[in-house]
Length: 452
Ligand SMILES: Cc1ncc(COP(=O)(O)O)c(C=O)c1O
Image (cartoon, rainbow, N blue to C red):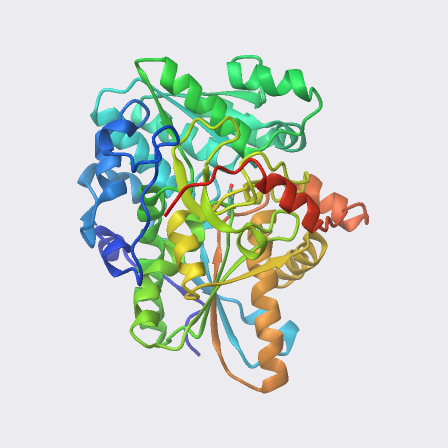
């Protein structure tokens, strides 16, 4: 029998990131300045991002070398294993072969440090002293605190208030790695104060937390802003994952029929699946499925149009699927999937029908996560449970049809610090939120109209 853990040696780690931009089936629409309606240039982004990252954001080079210092840092946890989920297959009685790429083995427990260390590295290189950021579930905030700590930078994190209250352990992780964490909205910024004045009990949202962090970066000379998802350079850094998967599937003698990942801002899904998108565009029969919460159905229900990346309208306008920048999703436990927008690269591929989006309620996702934990042992993050739900549904379809498909999913992170959400699920206290179309229509009213 073939190995259940498909491991790569450190010498087999990919040495460059894969940039999908030259391979896209349609041109990517540029970010637009909301004041002029014109595309923004690299200089417009310079107050909040270092030039090294801005260059990657707009690069048309297909492969971008990973600097040696970063390769050394990646070696702390990379390459990560690709695992065969034989016990899950058996429990489902499926003829499908299920594999998962296990990004939970990184020190912060998710895929997020793949870009956090890269972003901290390029900031450090350009003399930045402090990085400000937002976080939902706390995975990104802990990953950036970890990265800044390694590279000797200060880290200031605005954490969505409902997660700050629900998930104190990630806050403690950030403290251990020298990060400073504040619940968002906070009284520390003008955008936070304005929102608190309007709605003192708001659960917060990633859109609001982004506004606060961008404001801090824009107002302080020695501080830059860092985003944990959505932007092209963030997705680029995550492609080390999919390139490893490709090598690992080769070792296993497999070709994927179905690839599945969950989508918050799109970075884990993109990093995992983009190296296979070109194969699909070249004619290979691969289903690439992005899963999201029904309570925040950006890809399945949000129109494809220009919108702000944040609530206070501080970012440029991005062409993406969006529920509207002032949409505040219900406080579901998958905090990292509570974002109104989606990466422009993922949005374009959904619009082009290369990627298929699906939405799931949180109860069936936790049901899938618990089955996974009882068969494979690892406790998934609530975000990851959306990918597992999609995988189990695909495997059950194979059971009906008898097809022996190879299904590979992205295990984006573990849920060791999300145990209260499992407790809520197991004691029947979790609510599913169906989002009425009227609420989606209402949130579109403030989305600016951009020609083109
Ligand atoms: C474990 C995990 N998976 C997935 C996500 C979703 O983010 P993205 O779509 O950028 O990968 C998050 C975000 O916090 C996360 O923590």
